[in-house]
Image 1 (cartoon, rainbow, N blue to C red):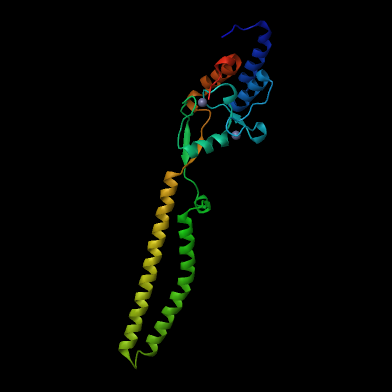
Image 2: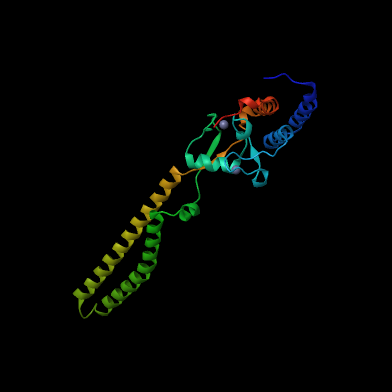
Length: 222
Ligand SMILES: [Zn+2]
Ligand SMILES: [Zn+2]
């Protein structure tokens, strides 16, 4: 690494002042990066700048690959199922949260189409079963004194009808609840925890020095 020139001292002093005054890691890295490079940093995933959201430097990557949007990184970690940087292998502090039921419903798949089919069947069969049961019970009451066996048969038919209806409803419900739980366990929402609590002061200092004295020739190579 080349030595520090006297002309660099005002820039270094300004950057260190920013570091000491700010506890916000994101704003610190953005300010230092802007002041030294003279160009707006951009996200290494979507290639958008600050207009698309706050930029973080959450790992050890340097140069043009240092910055990333929190949302972009979280989407990438969720999709890839990893918990570390693919380039520098820095292990992120992550929190994995269960996704909501509405997101499961909005995810297109064969399971969701089956659920829609079962809901339509339920909405169709429920009034039909209720009407059939009511008619059978009415018929059984009318035949109770004139034809006891036929009345008994109608009551058994009503009982069988509702048993099948309840069995199908419970089995379908358990099946779809099982699918939802399995999906939620295998598709958690990843939330990045930055800065890592145990490393906050040291990591902020490292990042400030990292942006101040980084050697352009040692930028992370893809
Ligand atoms: Zn981005
Ligand atoms: Zn990295």
